[in-house]
Length: 389
Image (cartoon, rainbow, N blue to C red; front, side, top):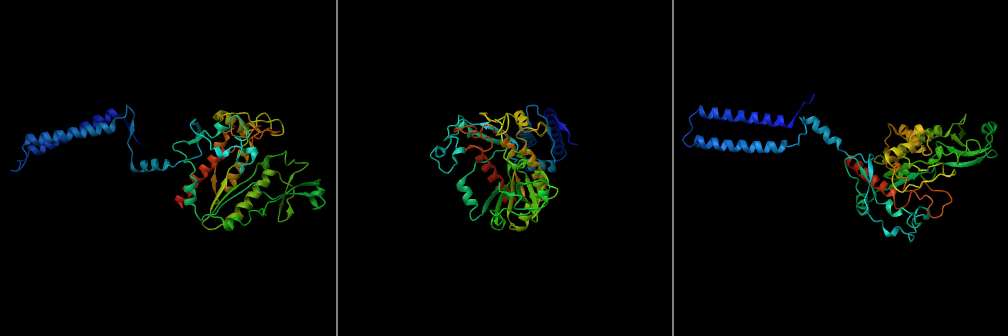
């Protein structure tokens, strides 16, 4: 157990040690005759006294702590302290910086951005403020994405993004007769859990870095009604019987997908799975009059009110999907890019009703905006991965 000694007692201890040293030096000098070329005793005592005073001054300077207790550290404790300082970019808070200005290229003349997400172009009331919030991790800073440095550092590197592309094809009873029809399913969305979507099936063979994510529809009854238009899962071309609910199908999809990618990926590839992007509907879902009227980030207690699984809130599906992700990815070679936690605060950064939308868009994000911070986080963690490799 490490004992803590008050700074005052430490000074007293130093003083006693130095006094004993002076006494021992004096005794040693007095017991012997000085050589002929020695400095006179009075002079040597003066020099010794000055050295002691200098030592006391240095010790007092080091021990000046304003009555803070100082632990006595051993080498292993110092090592642990250094390791602890590795930055965890996930935990932190949003800080408002009024001096930050948005780039003018994001105005209504920018053709690269879908107009529904261009909040400057659609005159959203807080569009200019959205980019003035900076993510500050606890105990460190998140570097801002530097495009030129990125292009230099990752020259000749193939980076791919795979997301929101499950193989979900509508089928009818006439196109697949058999047991599903006998169970009363006349139509639904077919999901082949073991067949990668053709748009990315070759990606693991080609890319050096791959970032995956999956969609919101696993908990989207408005899109996949369990009676009228259910998700129906197939494995090896045969329907899974009895039919399973979406969250079980998600586990099956993730298991096959992770296994497929790990077998097909390049030996040196960096594989990343991005966590869920949260929604911020309040007062109901998108088709139930839900809206996102916030003009600044949520407080921590407000985040819990909207996303806590215990409250069964409108936006809880992000955390639900993440639970399945973490379980499926455990023990795999995939690294996790957690954008959920920082994003849950940003209820202010959605397009909302800007631009005359019929429904409030509280799922997609304003551009520029939060997704720029995702880029910062991605590059920072990618640099850490490369350093470790």
